[in-house]
Length: 295
Image (tube, rainbow, N blue to C red; front, side, top):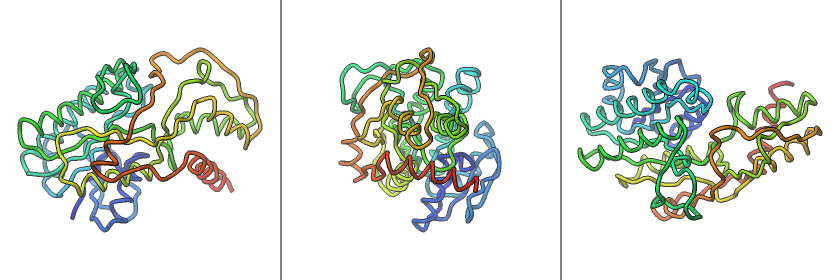
């Protein structure tokens, strides 16, 4: 079996590509830059290049569609780019998959829900995103699922928890806190730090992609989140416990998604998936890795 992993040169895409390889799949990486994952065939291409997307999708059995404008700061700064890549790019993937009879597993986000009406949030909860990032991610999800409904596409959307793990980009909250603390600088938390996140380890997310790829479940979205909730303040305090420094508080970040508890019950029932990496273990692994890189 062959999998096309879009965004395989990025943080999460690399984890997904490696997991498919571990499970015995042949992996084709599709990204605007070459993937450094050993053992994959790398295609440099753009999601907005219809011919390149069509050719890449035609050559595989399943598409793990991870590529996106995933940086919330970039999405806010360039909403037109987020709309193009996250919505039009995903539509191009869906069109190619319909044309060639391929399956798609799409990386959506728990942030599509917006302000919670009830908790824990299940997949029936209304979606009211309010930021260019989560608006466009929901747009891509809707285009994919509409192709399942109207055009016979085999596909599923995974509404991912906030991913973390090895290879995180430097402007992630994890890296910002860790890098500042290691330099002995204060960690500044936006707002009061009470905003909770169900941080989900990239290895768990990658395993969900493989399970979804091997399943015939289609036309639905599934919350793919760890059950444990950690506040941003708790994250800062855990980092400061390892690298002693002051934790301070600043203005609330504009557009920050409200704290919510999201239920992963359905994906456990449908795919047999549940998160296995505890937040404590995953954070310690990340800090160990960053220390090893400096030695």
